[in-house]
Length: 210
Ligand SMILES: [Zn+2]
Image (cartoon, rainbow, N blue to C red):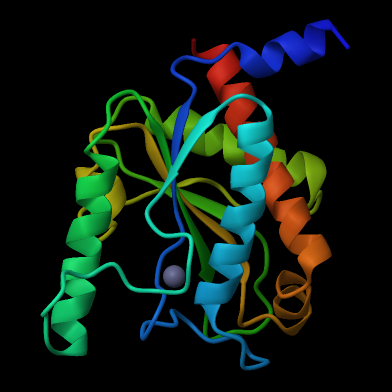
């Protein structure tokens, strides 16, 4: 099995991807209109994405791969644990060089009409906008042809993206406040499709920027 497309998979800038499924443990993240916590969806997509990247020869690191918060031991109180958890995720992103970093979230809004993936980034790394655009384009190409969302520039409120030293994007994969999208996002089939969308965008970005 040897073809140009297969070669492409191994043609990466560093071959290192750091993926983060936010929330976990006591922090469920947002809750879908059907009552499902975001943390489980983020983790399921991450586990699929990790498998796909590893099978393509990438080295994959994760901030968590089980249902837990990664705050320091001995920290009391949910707010303090959340703060420690965020600090530790950032420290992990910044513990490596030349990694592509991706945080996998689900969105929510007060109006149930809204759906579709949207990528968020900070301008603190010159590669972030292009990485976000590649991911956004892939959602349109593979999964959501109707999606007209634009990548969104954020500031310090996007803690991980703003302070990460590596190319970093926060992928909001869908809206848990939209009944149809929320129902899709809890199915293993759709979680695999979202993971494949992220995967193919990442390998395309690495191929084009190595
Ligand atoms: Zn979230």
